[in-house]
Each structure stands twice: as structure tokens, then as C-alpha cells.
Image (cartoon, rainbow, N blue to C red; front, side):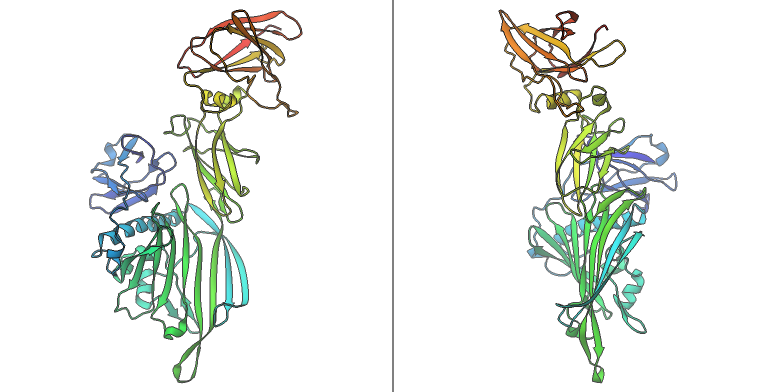
Length: 548
């Protein structure tokens, strides 16, 4: 079954939301992320009653009424209320006591629910094989203090399905997060599946912590009766966006007690604009112990394993993230701002020579850029046909190793001409007139003389922009309007550029305009036309054919 998720009342597509199909007993049957157009495809295993649950970070969960998949039409629309999760009333002070999620404070449960959504999506991202990873791994041997590096090594792993994985949850719960082998100890870091598993939740309690810069920490500790090696830590959430940023953890119940030092690590998360979550980096610090007389243990140093997601590619091999360059991930909608463009359009990063074509859902990725501000332009085929430059769609700041999100709309002809006339805002109700002079076979006629004439008593004072400003092959922008007043009329004269175009900006409604076109070398008139400017049109285009 397929469909689309939109916000109720506005019809805005809900992008990057986790959609879960459950059967009549509430058991998950399938799940997926909605694409840039809010669309989804899931598969039911029976014809019985089902529900669709929609989860998105920072918003309340929502579920449809029961339905039978076979009774749905081809465009099943799921309308979700735009009910954001509120921070009002979130009392960290009252939720400092470490308790189980089921029996803890409502504030703790609220933060956990947002963390769970992110971890569940990260787990799904890997299970679905949405991306492959090129990983850079660094191993360092540190002295006893952990301040001096004694040795280091690195290696690169390509086309990995995941950044790292913990051991099986049942084995971790039974034998602990540090497990001894014949010659050494293996330290396991928790992954998403571990943290959201029922055994982990049953053996750990949770509380809230305040962090810097509007961060909220969901702290966790093993319950007191745990006798195996364990972990405690904090999951840090941005309280403005509810997005999970980082996990910090430490090992507990290790042999050697305080002598184990700062054994622990951290895992950094990153959310991609399409809703997918990935592990961005991680670190594990493990003590190296030496057995002394009478069974005593002494720390002689640390081994530190550091991982960095160096490159992420989608299932088609297209680079999405690179640690050494920024990436722009964006969505283009039609001129209404709601639906994908009816056909793919070209998005370019102005001045970089980089241009890409949008996917069917309107999304696009421009990787391998330089850090700094980038201007994006969307070129519509209709604008290209008229030889019009693409107006600026958005401007974003890109940073090394990060994915910045951009949104843009397919420009209408009015938008493109407004940009050529000097950019918005234009005077309300005015009209831009774009003319194209061609020969009978359609070849553009450059250098043709165009004379525009209107009553002098009008209040027209538009900008003297002769044509959409695109330089010719030599980089020259040609033409200008020469304006003079003759009795009761105003006359403006220009010549067409190499595209055969001319442009009149900000014509007021009700203006009576006459146009004549002829050869610039003589006074012969090849075409004459009268035009009345009508309100509500925004932009007018007309092709005028002159005889050979």
C-alpha cells in the first residue's frame, strides 16, 4: 500500500517521518521513512484491520483509525495534526531520581520518547541498507595518565553497512559490556538496538540532567543488583529541536575498581535532512591492566579506539556526506510550496559549476562543495526555453563534514522576471512584459530596434532594465532603454540582445502601451502592436515574428 502523509488543514507534506504499519494486535508489520514529498510504501501481510502510526522528532505521535488495506484507494492520505511536543512544564529538578521508564517522572518519559524515536530511526536506517559507510579508524596507546600518546595507527574501511555494532543484547545482559577472553578483554559500546531493547530498559533506571546551551540529558544507570560489567551514561538532546546529538557512557563494575580510570566512550549522531539518522563518530577508551602480587591490578595505560564516518553513499553510490567537504541536501517543490515539481528540474550552486537534477520526490544532493555561503538557483525548463536566468532560490551556509538543508520552489515566470527587474519586492499589481523577437523559422533576432510608447500622464517609473541580464559569450551585457518625453507621450527605445529579448518592468495596471519593432539600421517598422496592461497577470510573455 502507498500513500502520503500531510499536515492537517495545511496539506504540507511531512518529510522524513517514521511510518509504522501495525496489525490489529498492534504488532509492527512494516515501517519506512516518508520521502521529500511525504510519500511512503509499506506492505501488509494480511487483509485484516491495520493502523498507520506516524512518529517524528519533536511532535506528538499519531495513529489512524483501523482500516483494511484492500479497501484503500491508490492515494491513501494520512493527515497528522501539527502538534509539537512542548517544553513547558518540563521540570528537570523533579526528575533527577533514577527510576524505570515505566514508573518514572512524566518529564523523563517525555524526553525518553524523543530519544527512542531517534534511536529507532537510526536502527531502521541501517536495517534498510539506505547508506554505506567509508570509515576511518584510529587506534592510540596512551600512558597511565591518558595525556601522552605512545603509539598510533589508522586504517580505512570502505562500503561498510554500519559504523559499529554492539554484541547480541542477551549476551551483553548475561555477561556484561566487558567480556574476558583467553588473552584480553573485549569492550562493547552500546548501539541503538541495545539502548531501546526491553532487556536494557528492564536493567537500567533513568533520570534527567541539565546541560549547557539548552541541552537536556537523559542519564541512565544500571540497577543496583547488576553483578556483571555495566555501563551508565547520558544521552544529550537539543531542547530546541528535540534531536539526539551525543551519547556519553562509562563502564561500571569492572575488576580493578578505581584503578580502571576513565574507561568509557562517546557516540555522536547526525540526522540527515531526509529523516535518516547515522552514527557520525565514536570513541572507546579502555584501560590496560597489569596483575601485581596477591592478585592486585594496576593500570599501565589506555587503548583508545576512535572512529569517524568519512564518507556516506546512498544505495545508488551517490555521495551524501564527506568529512572533508560540505554537502547541501535540499527539496524543491512546485510554485505552491506543497508538491514536488511535475518534472525534474536542475538545481545549481551558483559560481561553483555544480548542478544536479532533482529526484522524483523533489529532493537533491550537492556534495563536495567548499565551505562557506552558497547561493542556489532552480532552472525551470520553461525559463530555459525563454533564455531566462534562474532567480536565486535560497542561500545557505555549508560547513565541513556537515549536511545543510535547503528548500526552494520552482520559480514562476513572474518570479524570474521580478528577479531580472531587480528582485522582489516588486510594486504590487504591476506587470512585467517580456518580448522575444524571432525570424519566421524561430531564430532569435538580436539587435532589433524596439520602441515602447505610452501616455505621458501615466505614473510609470519602472527600472530601465532592457532585458534579462545574461551576458553573451564574451561576458558583455548589452542594451539600455533611452527614454524621452514628446508632448503627451513617453517613448522608450532599446535593442534586443543576442537572445532576441527585451523587457519592460513594473508596468502599472491600465497602461496603454504600443510597441514597434524594426531594423536598427533604418526607420522601417516590421511589427507594430498595442497592449493594455491588465492587473492580476504578474508577467506577460509574447513572441513577435518579424519578416526576413
